[in-house]
Amino acid sequence: MSDTPATGPATGAAITVRAPAKINLHLAVGPVRPDGFHPLITVYQAVGLYDDVSVREAEEWAVEVVPAGGGPAVAGVPTGADNLAVRAGRALTSYAGSGGAANITITKGIPVAGGMAGGSADAAATLVALDRLWDLGTPDETMLEIAAGLGSDVPFALLGGTAVGSGRGEVVQPVEDHGTWWWVVVPHRAGLATPAVYAEYDRLGLAEPPQPALSLLAALEYGDLTDLADTVGNDLQPAALSLAPELADTLGALTEAGAYASLLSGSGPTCLGLAGDAEHARAMAGRLSEQGYDAVLCAPGPVAGAHLVSYA
Ligand code: C5P
Image 1 (tube, protein in one colour):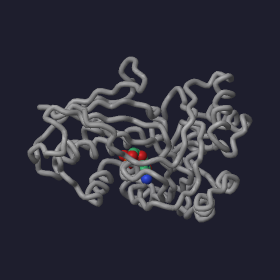
Image 2 (cartoon, helix red, strand yellow):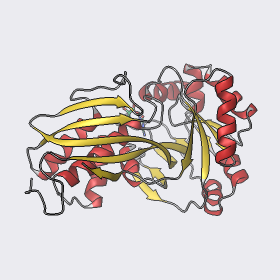
Image 3 (cartoon, helix red, strand yellow):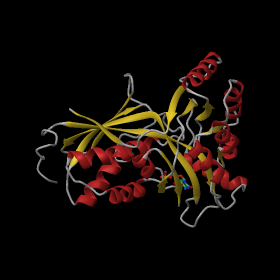
Image 4 (tube, protein in one colour):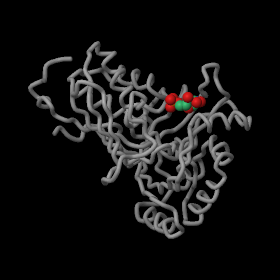
């Protein structure tokens, strides 16, 4: 660990980094590999729901998770050594050969266990925040490598924007996206565990070698809403619906409310509706709320990956 740089934060300062949720516009999942992961070809998009991660130098690792907008601690997120942000911090110190530790406060705006990679966002934000706190200047390639070791979606949370993911999702390549897309995001009251959804996908025997998303990439490049609506898709949707059949009603409600396309986010259970613009998204969200859906959100995409928001 280096001395505090002249341009860096004062001792005891907190650094806050914001990282976005992701959705998968295309998620093609192949047969399970010998290592237990599934080969993917996916198109990620970072959308405007965020977790903010603040780090402060400390004697020992500690993590606290609070909801965006205030209120009691968020349930369902581990706060011990299992928390992915703590694992990210340890991975960075191990790379840097330093012995530092930090207090990590996660302010959660991303639905928990929703298929929107909130834990991955926290890990990515922690890497960026600690790299700055300790003035490590870790090269981007190394950050992506450390991120890949933490989880399949963590490299994309660093990158943001819109990108093709391959391998198990950890190999990311930015793509042209000239749209400003609006999504209606409908969280589900109970989360779905990602491994359970993949296991159900295996059980259903649906896997084919994953195909690239050429028409979808063209729709993004030209910013064409109807072409995008026609080309989004998620191979995990039948598996998630098999585990949580009520999600079909949510997808149907989105379509009835006027979504150009309705699909599952990642491994679910969050459901997404593609809107024409911000106003349309708000009107759709209003209709779902009237029908009793809780905490319906609107989010634009693409947005930036993990980025510094404050020194304090
Ligand atoms: O990489 P990550 O830790 O996010 O993966 C969580 C779980 O999701 C894995 O343990 C595995 O069960 C499943 N998974 C998978 N294939 C992938 C990504 C995740 O089977 N490409």
